[in-house]
Image 1 (cartoon, rainbow over the protein chains, first blue to last red):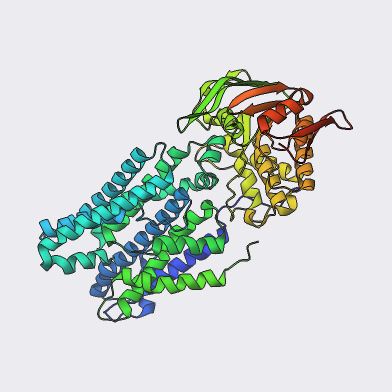
Image 2 (cartoon, helix red, strand yellow):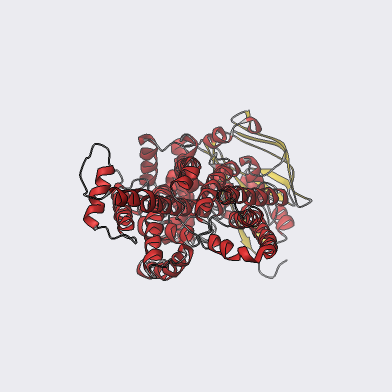
Amino acid sequence: MTTQARPSRARPAWVASALGVLAVAMVAGLLDGAADISPWQVVLEVADWLPLVHVDSGLAPVEQGLLFELRLPRVLVAAVVGGLLAMAGAGYQGVFRNPLADPYLLGAAAGAGLAATAAIVLLPAAEGSVPIAAFAGAVGGVFLAYTLGNAAGRGGGTATLVLAGVAVTSFLTAIQTFVQQFKVEELQRIYSWILGDVGGGWDQLWLVLPYAAVSAVLLLLHGRMLDVLSVGDEEATSLGVRAARVRFTVLLAASLATASAVAVSGLIGFVGIVVPHVVRRLAGGSYRSVLPLSLIGGAAFLVLADLVARTVLAPAELPIGVVTMFVGAPFFVGILRVTRRAVT
Amino acid sequence: MIGVCAVSVRLGGRDVVADVGLDVRRGEWLAIIGPNGAGKSTLLKAVMGLVAHRGEVTIDSRPAAALKPRARARLVAYAPQSPALPPDMSVFDYALLGRTPYIPYLGRESGHDRRVTASVLDRLDLTELATRRVGELSGGERQRVVLARALAQEAPVLLLDEPTTALDLGHQQQVLELVDRLRRADGLTVVTTLHDLTVAGLYADSLLLMAGGRAVAAGKPAQVLTEALVGRHFDAQVKIEPGPDGRPVVHLVRGGP
């Protein structure tokens, strides 16, 4: 008798449906905007962008420019940021063997927040300095937490790492609050950065894409290793795996992904926790499927969240971070209820 | 097959294992017995290279310290006393983890790895459960699944830390008979810790009695399971008689010590 069982990987059907949802979300994201362009023309225009396809959408050059320079980068930034945050969240959850771990666990958010605040306060005229500062701050925050955690607990145990993350987060947040008091007139800018924004345009997308690509590839390659790590350090070691090295690599990649996302979008909460959980509930717990499906699902989720942020109070915009939490939390509870499984 | 020479493990400023030596021949079953806190599990971990230790461990006549983790994992499979079972993982995926030492770091399992895993599940009557989630299994099924992972490692040495804890009488027998059968069929060398002395004497070829981190007696079951040794080191009053097959049977005596 041979068994029908197969190793868990991302099933093509799941990947295809996730990509389908993402495509629909992105087209929907392109449809909405202040200018009145018909959906059909948008679809034709998108088709025209594809290689080897030439269709005339009938759009005026101004409308084409609007679509290409404003709406498209916005949708793409949302997709990249959502995908990175969700995948980084899954990576952190795997490393810490804790479903509540999120991409900001090790001080990435606090580090980015401090650096972005400092950039806004010290260099108020230099718009372009904020993403770079946020990126460096996020990396710095994680580095600080990792170094402290390893110094405190020999061998890189996960509990000391989490505690170091908590300490670094409080410390950096305290400094950030202190710094922002110096320039109360910049408070609104600081807060709007913290609450998240994906309207950065092509420049910011190109800025983070190399880091995003490297971290995504690294994380996707580590799916099986994260499955091995799920039996704990000791047993992973007995299986011939250097657990501390795997953990370091995954944390490095996930933190790079988080820093890239934070640099272009500020601090968008909840994506990194909700999306991997939904994926796990629907498609099983193996990281070999959780990581790729989180990447696609996170992209779709944030594109839709941005759509909601732009439309609910149009022409005013809600901060996207508010939407992810406001929509994400009830949605999450719903998923938990619907997919509740009997566990003996 | 396994040689341990003057091994000591220091944890929290205390010698948990002190100057222990042992020698297990190929195909032999050694059971490590001793009261709680005697250092049995720690000794197994030292053999597996999971705790820092002094002294030398040799595996298949090679110094274990010189072996790379993957090479070591191909020689020795280890099942801890309370293994971490990821509840959402399928039984097949869990057993497949045993193939890790053969799969390249960022690679994926080969057809051979899948076939080995499937055949191990088949031998342990787990094929029916292959797609079930590990978290849904009963205690006895879990123990077999952990054993399946260890066997999928295809290592000539099996280290099992209390493989029968939390199992009822029937399941204890089932697991031990299984280990014994596999040992005879594949020529495996088995080292287990066991807390049930009669069971240890029944299945093992030789016993090592540990107390306070030291090896206090070693030899055939009848040489180690004596009323004097057990009484002294377990602080218990027992009566030991030869069973039907001549192996010692340990009874507690009421009213002692």
